[in-house]
Image 1 (tube, rainbow, N blue to C red):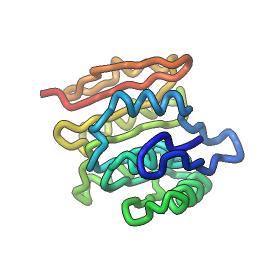
Image 2: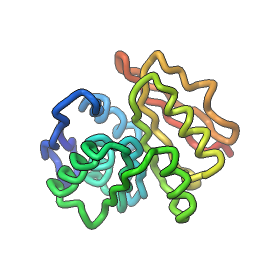
Image 3: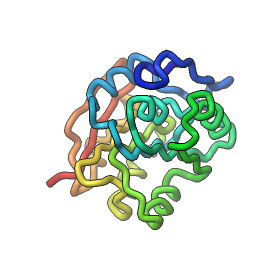
Image 4: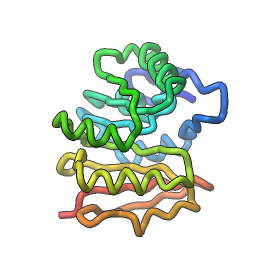
Length: 185
């Protein structure tokens, strides 16, 4: 697992020693960032279910101004912290040990808003749907912001996109699907 481009280009990130964390494959990540394009530049990014910090750090490397990482696993956050230090990104990154749903409430109450939100939970547990429901009550997504959910092809989220949001693109890579969601106008 590596940073594909930007200021930390080619840097190999620390990877999990077990299968509790499923990092986004490089080819899926490269496609994701090709779709996002320059939207990441100067963006505030939320990386929910951060795992190793792979998506958030790729965002930072490509010009995001701030990345908030959230995970409930101490092991994942240690891995994320080590990768942040490896990238020398400490000044632009924060790590929060919290359940993702509760973190949405907390970050909203703190007045934070994000241009990009990555939701990459364990597959087939309905977690993307729960986060989408939370975002209706606590709209963390900034105007013109995008939420990118990575989920299993067996976990159809089409019917779970809440009113006021629009699923505008799905991209499938084998078992993995990237769903791109934005506020509807």
